[in-house]
Length: 385
Image (cartoon, rainbow, N blue to C red; front, top):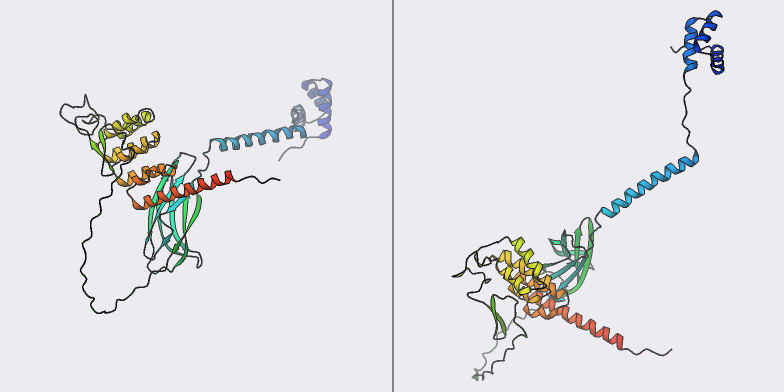
């Protein structure tokens, strides 16, 4: 149990201490007065203890403290906003090979995905054919593609034979980084022509057919320029088509020929074949010397390594002719479509995929109509007020 201090004894000791008397003198005086020694010692200890100081914070100090804490919180939040990567924004532009289909036909879809940010992210794509009246999905398919600054996704969807004629929506839903983007394209499904069952007819009289006179073969015109910017090929035009023949005895044609070795022709005889290093070297000189860049890509003899190299320098140098050196037809068409999406429609005739060719020609017609409309708007007379 805590011992209680006699208040009168305590007050006396405090008063004497304040007057300057030493504790020994006060103890002696109290003993002579008959106080219990233990009570005296206890009272001296309590009275001699320094008073506890209570920390008091004024209202003004409290305001400054709160303001400082708030400033720290705001600085931390601002730092998070500055250093945290911003959410990627992707624009979706789908193009169909045509606008009208029959039940059972296949829809060819070319989707251009573009972003102002070069950071690559995986994008999941859902393609759904929607009946807008019944609000139901007729058919669908899914895919995934990595998107940096731009990418092209090519898909095909076959319509069921039982699809009723009418207006339909192709809805494309893109999911990336917990973000969803949806766009739609309207198309029409036509009524199939009725099947006519032939009836038995009397045999027609045999008519002697005249042998037609063969028309003179139409003269094929060559393109304006067949140069593929590859110094390892001889470029010529044969029957209206460009032909690129590999030059013999040329360092850079992908063939290690007699008189060539790793020392004097590393491109052909298995020198440095690190495709990443070669591609980076080609990219550095693509704008200033595209022919030398093409020679470096040709040194990557394996198409799986050379094709991405040609695609990279074609985009870097803005020369679509370099796409022609890509051996894989699908990769070559994708390289050419990059230029088509950049409003260079001279590449349309070089596309081997007929659906991409149709899409490219549709883009060219749309661009022409848009330009004519803009010119018409600019030339309209201004009415007087």
